[in-house]
Amino acid sequence: MAYTYMLLCSDGSFYVGSTRDLEHRLYEHQIGEGAAYTRHRLPVQLVWHEEHENVGAAFHREKQVQNWSRVKRLALIRQDYAGLPALAKKDFSRRRDRSDESG
View 1 (tube, rainbow, N blue to C red):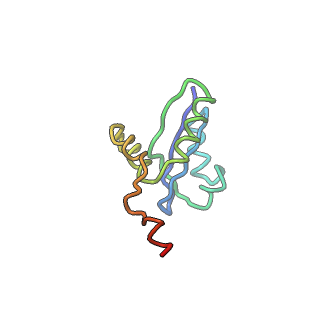
View 2: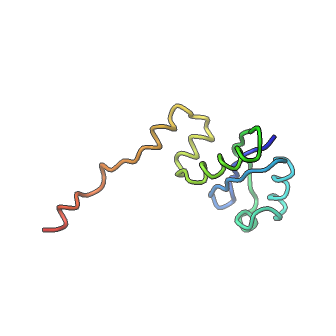
């Protein structure tokens, strides 16, 4: 088994990682022996995890979630799976029309 996980850091940011041993990896993060990113943002709290068949699948999911916005990550934590597709769509309604700038 392998896991993809998300930590909430002390500064309010999220860290997403993957591992074969979730309990041990969480312990490493909590004592400052995890990733450099979390080492400077202690304490950390596990807010989400997902189990996978193998490390490759867990790593693939890690990279996917790392590219998500904060809002989409929060929806994942809340298990709002129905809302995830809508959050993936970009909202261009607030962008100005470029032709307005060329006047």
